[in-house]
Length: 116
Length: 118
Image (cartoon, helix red, strand yellow):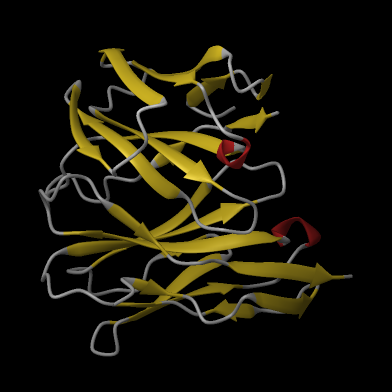
């Protein structure tokens, strides 16, 4: 089974609007971390936001927030007030456990295009 | 500027060449990674070094040979590659094993080395 599922290969959003990128995960561990990365066309993977499985509040970082629904095993990324520079690939990732060989699992990614 | 530095940014090599990709970090991270990424695909893990010892090798062909000379440096030696090995090679580092005390253990990536094998 896929550890991380991103069901939206491509998304479009109007500039200044909000957009939600979906991510669901599969793990039987109680301790895990969820991450979102942005990859512009230049290639660098840029860390955006992190949510720990024990965190009770949804993570926020500036215009990025993570809608964490533990029972549904979902960790959707919300980008508010989209900007043209937000156009990129977005990857959801998970790290299981606390000492499990540093293995990160990545989803297949969502390509976001911001329309002026 | 990224805190993980990769050189070279671009590399073109023939199938008989021997070349190396280099990665350096000075964040005190104790885990370092090599990923391979094809266009429009997620990164695929190749190798993980934890405390300078190889801890994960994802059944990578022997034409790719990793080396971790010290806790700040990670190399990927390339020999007799195939055209299908053309890809973006990403180096990353993290603190090491995560814990509830240390928290996120974020994977920090370099800008990548774009490899073309002719």
